[in-house]
Amino acid sequence: MAKMRAVDAAMYVLEKEGITTAFGVPGAAINPFYSAMRKHGGIRHILARHVEGASHMAEGYTRATGRQYRRMPGNIGPGGNGYDHRAVLRLR
Image (cartoon, rainbow, N blue to C red; front, side, top):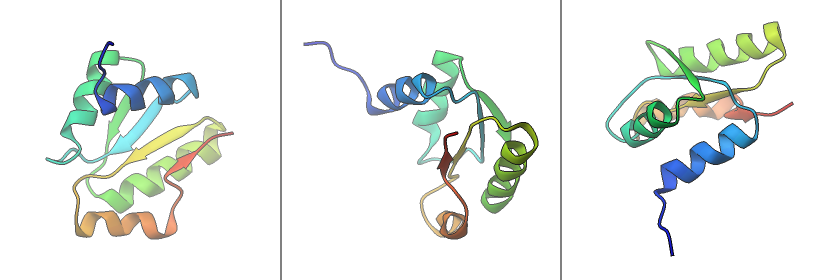
């Protein structure tokens, strides 16, 4: 049976759902996902300076374009607090 990393499976799901743009802050815990995103090449990443800023960027992008987005956390820990009041994944 062929084996696949969880991040590669996640990339296939996101690509199948039509996600083309991601907003986030790279960090140790999320780096494997960034590696998979670079390997697959189907999702453009826009770097944010703060995790909550990534939420606002993604929300504005969706409102302005009507397109789907994916916001990714930076690190595990206090940075995850930015998820409390913003959509993590929004599909039209």
